Image 1 (cartoon, rainbow, N blue to C red):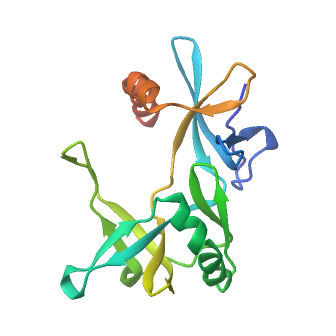
Image 2: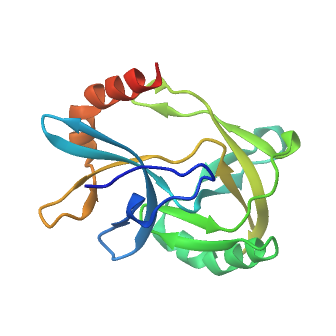
Length: 190
């Protein structure tokens, strides 16, 4: 249904990409990295075509300063045009895509001095730290913000809905099929 073949020059055929759409109608174009089956249901491992970015607000002073992810839609809307302008200076185009903010364009080379390690905790369990690369920082209404891109790609699992369009798995459904999907991925890697 969704082939995931890559040619040798990393170009993909048009059939190997899909578009996810959120409840607001925003879209996220993705490459189909893998197609996996669990109980005759096809699941797709997707990677966004454009690079994912996260915006953080710096709070506190000196050694106590901490980066807090900006997840509030109202805040994102109020700072979007400023973030868009500072990224445009690097020939990057900020997009308010479905499920994530993304940038189109060539990212700058990774520099050790521009890396930030984010410690993530979920349900009281510490997860693998995530490394992010600083793309730009800016001020909006006296608040300092920074735009980072993860070094590891953002991945989504989706399945075809009743009309054949890809649909992001709900957290409950993902938890249900996660062990089988991970097992297949690990088997392919061996």
